[in-house]
Length: 341
DNA sequence: AGCCTTTGACCAGCG
DNA sequence: TCGCTGGTCAAAGGC
Image (cartoon, rainbow, N blue to C red; front, top):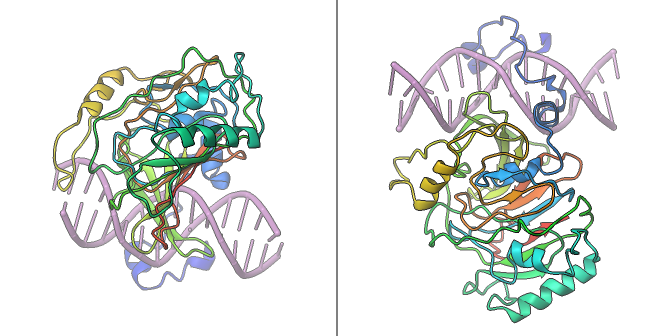
């Protein structure tokens, strides 16, 4: 504090010599996201699911996979996994999920299985340069996820059946789902088009940071959700990390001037679904694309308004943190992976 | 008018 | 103990 009292130039002008800063509303700033999220929302391993898939109505995903990584690249908005890679497909795979919901296959097995499926599907493995196919998959493991995408060029919403009938215990560990698919060359200027309203409250170039990191908060009152967004120099999103769990439904979609248009069907339906605020974990009304219960996993479905080129990842060390990473923006590589582990 | 972005300062954790 | 770092605050300005 004292060290900063010199307040140079701009800073001095903007900030009065300094009334002691009020204590932050968030828990001890210490752990930042972690602390806040942990303290405010720690429903379980899959809080991340909720954050990850804000569109999901009741993402009470109870699975215990600790990390969820989804590398995705801007598939057109209402996006769905190819049949062979859809969460449902993955979950339907007996090799991946036992009838009891336990994961009974190794990474290699999972990989082999998904790869095989991919090979037989219209969405076969493709090379990075091939833009004709939306996805390809390389490995998989537990669950799938869905993806954030651009708000532009959306294709008709495609619902992926949820897997309420499948049971999935909390034993998803060390498995990974990796899906590679193509991305479009969409460009987004906002990392926040995921159905929620966000307010940027900070930006910083982190250490080693080639890219600036932006900090966003959900603008809904009392909503603890935050997200960090890293962009490349060309504006592409490199990574998005969600923290916390929305304690409200999607707000009525507010169209930006540039975004134009009106709510799409998904938005409308989602809003209906979100009419009632959720109360407890497991009842998050993240617009229904991701639903799970203690006994079942379901997956995010196709439609998701979001940003493109992202990779979702929930790190194991912070159960409710979800990372959405884009591919290497620098090389324009369109090959993305979906990883779950 | 209200909301959002920008941006430097502040602060706590960590090594 | 100190410096570094990441995260957050909040004034100012823009839309």
